[in-house]
Length: 176
Image (cartoon, rainbow, N blue to C red; front, side):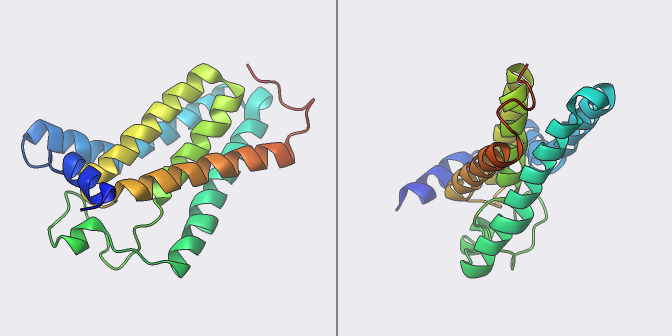
């Protein structure tokens, strides 16, 4: 058994043991992303004039990593989801014909977290923690392999760093 299968079984193996843990996994895999986006929206509203360029860059990074690069990789390299391979019903609804690799959720939320971290370390740490919770929960509920998450996270982080270097001049947006 390879390391990806081992990690998947270790994390997903906790599913079904405790009802509260299943509910937490479902919440973080399916709904917590809306909490993060709402918090980001609140930051945008409260500091629009000072920080709108950061938010635009964060969303651009997230969208490019998730909806362009991750989808391009999925087009050329199809990997079935764990619940398809092991033939079980995941804790959240997910299309069985949709590719698993790389994780779009991981690429999106790690890209957001990276841009936020570059300009506000404390808020960035909170967003990284949220991205990790979402990513682990996606493995827990059975819709991603750990390597899907790892590659999605790396993709999101790299896209954010590259777009930040391209679009933000050295004397541009000041980190806080």
